[in-house]
Amino acid sequence: FMLTQPHSVSESPGKTVAISCTRSSGSIASNYVHWYRQRPGTSPTTVIYEDNQRPSGVPARFSGSIDSPSNSASLTISGLKTEDEGDYYCQSDDGDSVIFGGGSRLTVL
Amino acid sequence: QITLRESGPTLLKPTQTLTLTCTFYGFSLTTSEMGVGWIRQPPGGALEWLALIYWDDQKHFSPSLKSRLTITKDTSRNQVVLTMSGMDPVDTATYYCASNGGRTRDYHAFDIWGQGTVVAVSS
Image 1 (tube, each protein chain N blue to C red):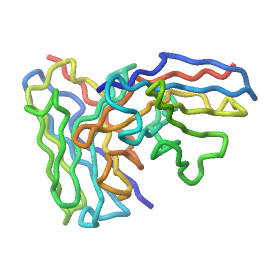
Image 2: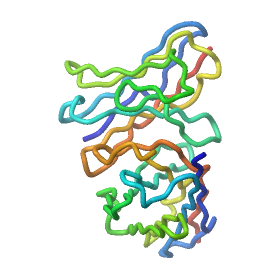
Image 3: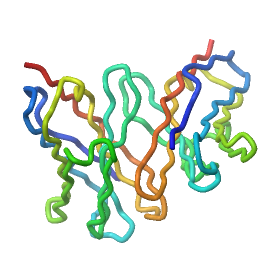
Image 4: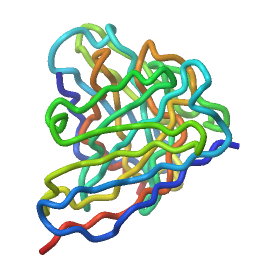
């Protein structure tokens, strides 16, 4: 299956933004979805794992969810800050292969 | 503290074989559930998963690249080695290794990533 993300999203500081990740086939609930942020020139870091779990050090402004009717996962960031800018990737697996979404560039302006 | 560092050639010619080494610190690949994977990212492009190896030597490969890839581990040196044959200019990318944090093998995901190493393929 594939994971499809919007190419780019933008929102103002202090607002809330949601980045979607739509699974092409099979149920989104069948396999965990994880989210990574990549700031320019740096390696990716995990912001959400197992659909909705935050690693230590990731602020509570970051949350993850899945929506079965739309077969998609979402990363929601509230109280946007300019430091939240970067590329966000969703990732899942099918038990054998790892699948990444195409990435979404978040601009906070 | 877990860290990973990739090393290998920066420039290859087409048809050559790429050998990359991931040296890691702060964990052992003899620990149950631990895994190390390789992911690449072409310039300006998205992340693409390549391969994954677990503590018990279970291996997983990208279906589209499987015929070109091998992955091995050396637990005494805390290293994972990826080889990719038949390199082409389209394989030019930053190559990352990453650990799964030892959470579980029930799903595949990555916790800590290395800084990445840039590999260019050109004649």
